[in-house]
Length: 85
Image 1 (cartoon, rainbow, N blue to C red):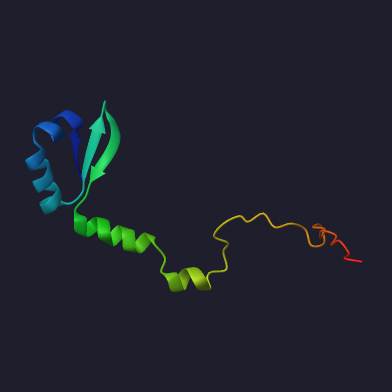
Image 2: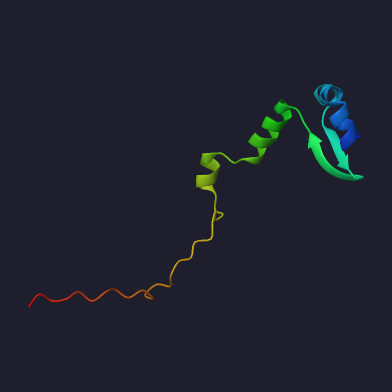
């Protein structure tokens, strides 16, 4: 993976993009630290589909998908209904 300082990536964007499409992902650095990676749309879609479980996988999963605050059983009291006598 080639590394590009952000100034070079901005100044030579067409070359930066061509390198991504022909050579694969390209790293962008900002002040010497890794900041971002440019990848092709094909690679992006592959990564997204690999990271996202299907609806079937979600429904069959044993793992909780959210923390739901459930009251203790019997902890909720019902309202007293007024008698109509």
